[in-house]
Length: 236
Image 1 (cartoon, rainbow, N blue to C red):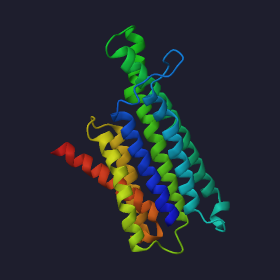
Image 2: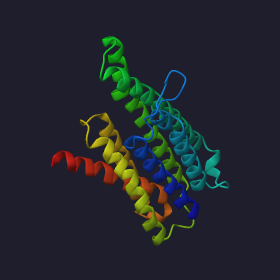
Image 3: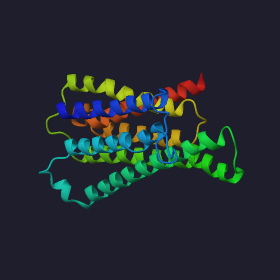
Image 4: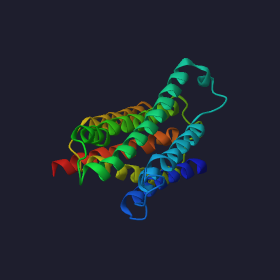
């Protein structure tokens, strides 16, 4: 569990890095040549998503047992396809969003050089890239939960380890809330809600033995707090 805690702390750190990247003025400088991107867009397109994907891979290694016969099944191969698909969509969504966001902010907020072109840029920035990004993010989480459910820990995580998971889960919940609570309710909230339901179903099928599925517990807490918090905010 020490490595699991370290990986989850790394995922929380990516949320902090994304926030600092967005909220500070230090990343507003342009890259050369031609000022093709800001450091803000570059960081959110390449190093931060790459770090996230590497951490997800390391987390997958922690929940698989090399001697398990499940690794040789077609179902495990399907779960890995889900994970790889999620990683691709997560990267594609990040790239599409950041590039479109830069063009949107630079050319379509203060001036409209071409209405048709700006409509395309804004749609990619505010809609299409979000769907691709969220689809990838969700598939990565779903794949890890299904893999862990199929290979629960033989030595369950102790209660203190579960308590140590809580702060990291709340960081992710805050990220979900920040991305959903201040936007119009769309398909993203329903998709996040469905992942929350899946995580709770998997835990229920294991009779709420959180120690056997600590990563699923992490996602269940993250999504439940993030989605329920968003709904309460919308209903206030």
